[in-house]
Amino acid sequence: MPSPSSSSAQTRICVFCGSSPGASPSHLAAARHLAEYMHKHSIHLVYGGGTTGVMGEIARTVVRLGGKDRVTGVIPESLLGRERPGVEDVEGKGKEREKKLPRNWARRMGWVGGGKADQDTDKAKLLLDEEYGQVLIVPDLQARKKKMIELIRDGGPGSGFVALSGGIGTMDELFEVLSWKQMGVHARGVCVVNVDGFWDGVVGWVGKAVGEGFVRKGRPILGNVEKAEEVVGWLRGYDEERVKGRERKVEIVKTGDDHCVHLNGIELKAPDVVDNVLVPDIRASVKLLQEFSDKPS
Image (spheres, rainbow, N blue to C red):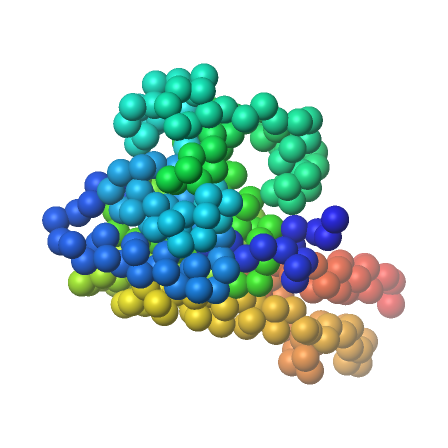
């Protein structure tokens, strides 16, 4: 089986959004439009697993257009009653049924790559819903966010995160992936669909934080698109630039009695972060440079 991060891996978009429909019909319309463009480009939906509001709208539309295998919801067990009304347990009631999963099922599906975290995932429960797709039931909110990030991190080209309209929970998930991105846990694109200016305040705050030096300058840490149909192109463009940025020539150059690191012919005074992630080949070069510096002259 190819690595989940290879070019043959499935392209996935994780959508954060509200379990309420919002006051304006434009919020649900944006969810439907995004679902249609994801279907058009054969993109798998990862979302919060709910059946109400904006969450339910996007999942229902993707399943209607492409089938239940095109959707993976991730929901904490404690939120089943709130975000999936009528589901009090997962013992096969109604149209939802629990599937008995084989050992290491998550790795076999290409969702994870092995290790203790994957063993924990293998213990999760999986619901199969004809209307909303497959749903992973995880222990808590943190496990939900962790699994969402893993699925997108290991997805194919153009995978990334999108925030539609939502409330505090949506904001929490958005800033979690931004924080993990800045720490180097993933390097995928993150953007908002700014329906009727819904995200103007957040986009303005991020710009202010960058200008004041609290967020690193460089490639945009948060993208801002006005229409759902722009999401796929924006994430693909971001990913292409990210991959292109990996094509770096790092050299140790001797200048007199000293040595320095050059990246694509440019001397790096204090090499630390590229694309918000410490690049492995630069890290190795810096270590080599330190070894040179430690040698007696």
